[in-house]
Length: 86
Image 1 (cartoon, rainbow, N blue to C red):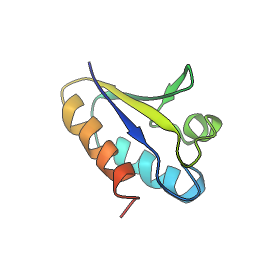
Image 2 (cartoon, rainbow, N blue to C red):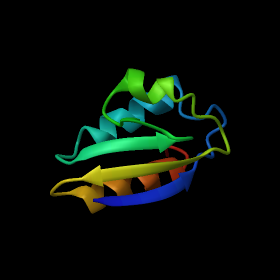
Image 3 (cartoon, rainbow, N blue to C red):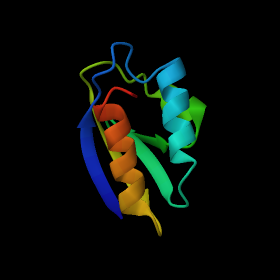
């Protein structure tokens, strides 16, 4: 299991379009991946799950992965958020 925290910098947080990019990236990996925010943990490969967290700008989230490519998965998703989905 591998995990990292990241602060969401995107103006709209992790909603609609950014969430779709995030989920598409998460689905590229074989590992199980979760997003944790304020004591709730959801499947990072589920659009409804990610949207249900209501992640806004400035919120710190934890990305957790478990599987054969867990480090790559977490690092890629943290980079995606850190670089504002660019």
